[in-house]
Amino acid sequence: MRPHRGHSTLMAYLSCGGANRGALVLGRSSRGFSARDRAYVERIVPVLGVCEAALEHATLRRPRGEQFALTPREREVLDYLELGYTNAEIGLACGSRPRTVRNQLSQIFRKLGASTRAEAVAISLRAR
Image (cartoon, rainbow, N blue to C red):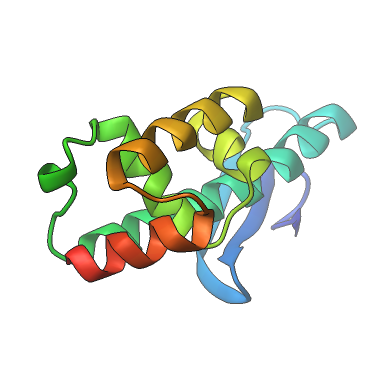
């Protein structure tokens, strides 16, 4: 992340898994960005990269999960799980706490008949 064309525009590159997913450009007309503003953007850029990667991942495949009666949120959590994210990373991307993600994963495991994260991902991939 760096100032772009002076201090009134801030540019950040979105990446996930080492792949560039896009760019975020923020501008201010009258005053530059404070250190607090830059720190906030630095915190949200990884989340935006994860969300962009998950969206791309979800659009490249056909819908699934209905045979397991997963809710839309459970399908979203399962998508992040397939990308290899931890509970904390999934929570950050979904706007939930890691404990909530843990509980959602327990429900997903129960519905899929899985006992581990890897088994849940394998069942999900086979169901496609």
